Length: 185
Image 1: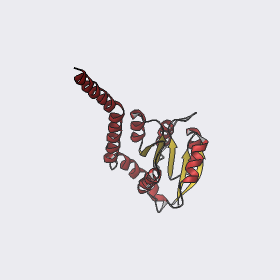
Image 2 (image 1 turned 120 degrees about the horizontal axis):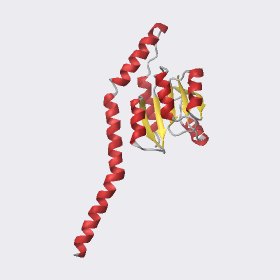
Image 3 (image 1 turned 180 degrees about the horizontal axis):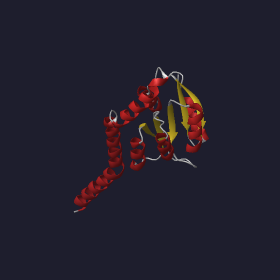
Image 4 (image 1 turned 90 degrees about the vertical axis):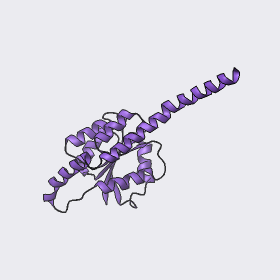
């Protein structure tokens, strides 16, 4: 069973994630919960989770700063980002720090479960203590090399999403204006 840490400042959402996802069916167990990045860092030190599911915008320490600190301290476990903010800067920062997935709230049934399955593929459990340092090195190389394609795919998704939100509505307004102008003339 993989150990999961849930980091979310809104208690109702945090409890919902813990209680509504069938963690056992995913081969996981929620070992701790935290309301902000600072609490999460303490929980990581105490429980050594295999996977972190975190919000971005939180008081005290946000998810990006927490992720930066984890990476600086040599913690390379997969992280799934959950957020209501769809700004490209957040997505880019999360991806650069090795986030496995970036889900926008409210996410749909199966989205978190699919992200957990993806994260599970990235977890390497060493058989012996001598393999730990090699696993950390391999993990760093993996984030830098193997997942570049997936990172590019996510970046393209966010660019497309931004296009749909900002450019496409403007295009529709222009078309409607031209159509109306031609009709009146």
